[in-house]
Length: 87
View 1 (cartoon, rainbow, N blue to C red):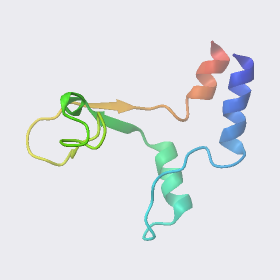
View 2: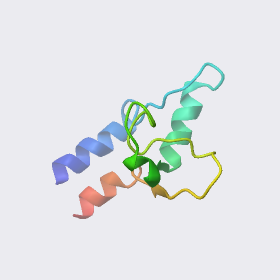
View 3: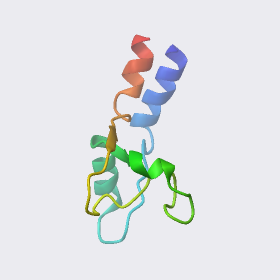
View 4: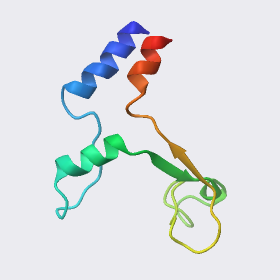
């Protein structure tokens, strides 16, 4: 566990800990910092839709459509090293 904690922590400080898909409108380093700090989410209702026809990937859907959606937020990136260390 200590080895994995060190490996994950090293990746955080050496190289890019996360690479977000970006356009030319937003600088890459700004968007990667935003992705690192903020949580991500999945649309729970999109897990039951047909992949490739209704949704591009399970859990990925248009979250701006009308109607009540069940959204699950995931905060992962910053806390993995600490979790591994304390375990």
